[in-house]
Length: 294
Image: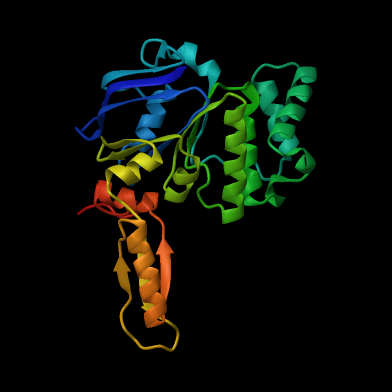
C-alpha cells in the first residue's frame, strides 16, 4: 500500500534559492526510505514538506492519502518527526520523558503508564527506565528520542540524521530498532550522511543533488546502473619490495581466478573490495557526500 506520494515537488525560498525542483517518488507501507545528498542538496526541505512543517512552491505531495498543502491536519495525528537537533532532558529519566509525552498527547495517567511500559519494552529501554538521560550512552539517548516520537503510535516516522554522532555500536543499535519498527507496520523516511547506513537499511533510496533527483531506486540498482563492481587491490607482501599497489576491476570469475593465481605466483597481497554504495554515490553526483562541487 502506498503511504507517501510526491509528484513534481519544488520549493523556492524567498530570495530565489531553489531547494527542490521536480522531485517525484512514492513510498510503500513498511519501507525504510533513505534520502541521500550533500549538505544543501534539499533533503531536510523535502522531509519538512512531507511532515507538513513547510509548504511546497510547486507540485503535489500526499501522506496517507492526504495532501500536505490542503489537508495537513488529517496527516499530523498519524506521523512523528525526529529532527536532527533533538536532545533529551539530561536530568530526567527515560520513564519520565515518555510518560510526560503521553500526558502531553492527552492520555489519562493510567493509559499513559500502560503506553509508557509498552513503548519502553518495544524499544529495549525498560531496564534503563530510572537512570538519568545524562547517564545513558549516545545510542540509548537516541532510542529515547525515537521512543518519545513513538508514543502516538505513528504510521509514518520522519527522521533527520538519526544516528549522527553515535559510535558504531550505538548506530547499529538504532538500526536494529528501526528494522523492528517496520516489521510492526511503521513506515520510515530518514535522511543520512552515512552511506553504509543507507546500504544496510534502505529498501529504496533517493539521491538528491542541488535539489534535483540524481537517482531513485534500490541500493543494488544504484551499483548496477553506475557500473560499479568489485575492485581487487594487488600490492607487495610485507617486506617484499616497494611497488605501488595495483587496482584491478575483474569482470568475470575467470578474471578473478587469474588475479588470485598471479598473486600467488608473484607473492603479492591480494585484497578484494566489494562494490559499495559510496562508490555508486561518487559516480552519480561526481564527488563524496562530504564535499560540495566548486
